[in-house]
Each structure stands twice: as C-alpha cells, then as structure tokens.
Length: 295
Image (cartoon, rainbow, N blue to C red; front, side, top):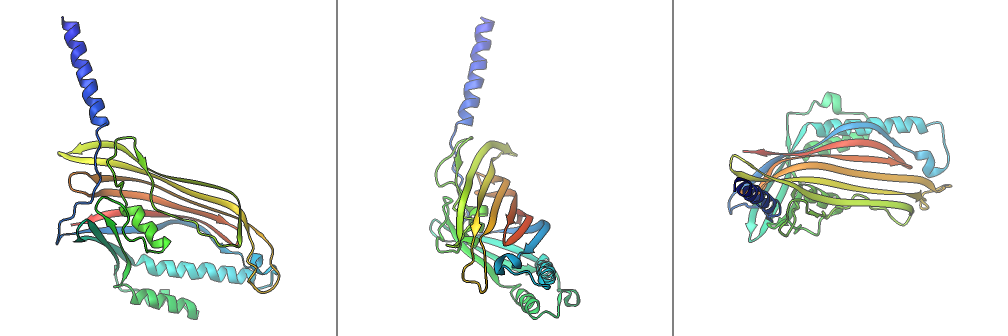
C-alpha cells in the first residue's frame, strides 16, 4: 500500500513538473499609458585589439605614406572612441498608441568633455568630435515595437533596426521552455563588388528556463546570433589599378537576459557583440551590450 502511494505521489510530482515546464507563456511588453520604462543602455567597447584599413589593397599601389595613413586612421578612431566613452545612452519605452511601444534612445553626457585631450589639429577629427559634442542631448534612435514583441518600425535602416531587435524584439506568440525564435537583424550588407564563396548564419533566441523570484515569474532567454561570409571584393570604381581582395566578415552576438512575465519588462540583459573582419578592413573587436533599468 505504501509503495503504491509513494509511486502515485512520485508520478504526480513528475507530471506536475512536466506540465510546468511545458506550460506556454507570453513575453509581452506591459507599459501603461502615461508610464515610461527607462534603461541605461550600455554599448561599450571591451576589446579593440586590431583596427587597420588596407589602402594598398584598394589602389594596388603601396606608397611611402601608407603606414602613416594607417597609423593616423587608428589614432582617428581612438579619439572618436574617447569622445563617445563620455556619453551615456538612455532608452525610454512609452505606450502612446494601442498595442505599440515607442522607443527613443538619447545621449546623456557623463561630464563636460576635456577638449585639450580630445581636440586634434586634424580638421576631420575636430569636425566629428564637435558634432558628437553637439549631439549629446539629441535623440540617436527612434523606433517602435508592438506590445506582443514584433518590430513595428520596419522603416529603420539596418544598423538601427538591429539595435531595436537586439534589445526589444520578443516572440509574438506563446512559447515554452526549449522553444526558439529568430530576430529581425542583418549584420552584413555587401554590394555588387562582393563575390561570396561561402557563408553561414545562425539566428536563434531560446527560452531556457522559467523561474520565480519573490513570487515574480521570470523567463530566462539566451541569444545565439552569427553571420559569416568569405569571398572576394573588387572595388572597380576606385581610380588606379585594383585587384580582387580576399575578404572575411564574422559577426556574433551572445547574450543572456531575464524578462519579467508578470510585469512585462527586462530585469536584466547582458550580451557580447563580436566582430572579426579581414581584407580591405581588418578588425577584431568586442562590445558589451547591456540594459540596466533606471528607477
């Protein structure tokens, strides 16, 4: 009798656990009219070990100033990066229309820039830095998603739509633990000068766990995005002789995030975007992507 009772209890517990695991949930934004959900949006370089623009491959002629130009280019991007390290990005989500969540990303300066370090005699660098300083209070992104998670602002250019998708696109249908969906992102966009020999793409976001923290139901979501192409570039419109250049481009985005099913918002979001390219532009860098709610 005891064995039968124990078997029944064990079976009940197992079935209950299985039913909880297979229970569908909806990951929807829940922002009331008049409310604003605000996130400190981190997009910070954590590794920029290589950045080099190969002028000799474009023109087919290596002159004495090539190395100097590459060095100047490296310093140029370092100075630009310095300027943007002084800026916080703040993203605000509001509900202005039925079923639509508006997204605005603004620049907020951390402190007054030290122009003695950032300014350069190079006219182009000065112009870019001046523009960056003038745009500190401006909106850098304006997009929208439906409250069910799909992207509403289809008109955005790829780089901005990628940001909206990374951070705010959700599955527009109920999902269970183990279910996966894709994001509306496109890292690589080459023109007719690129001839692709091989390519690979992964676009998978997975609900890995549903847990409760202090009674709040939390969905754990993992991101696995990758785009890779290998081929040859031929920039035929450039003056002088040119030759096909072997090129590879490899983007990855790995992230883990926690979404409050009950309150319809991210509790945490942490990811790494990686870029590795060879050819006309050699780059090997990583960038941290995070969301931190401001209350």
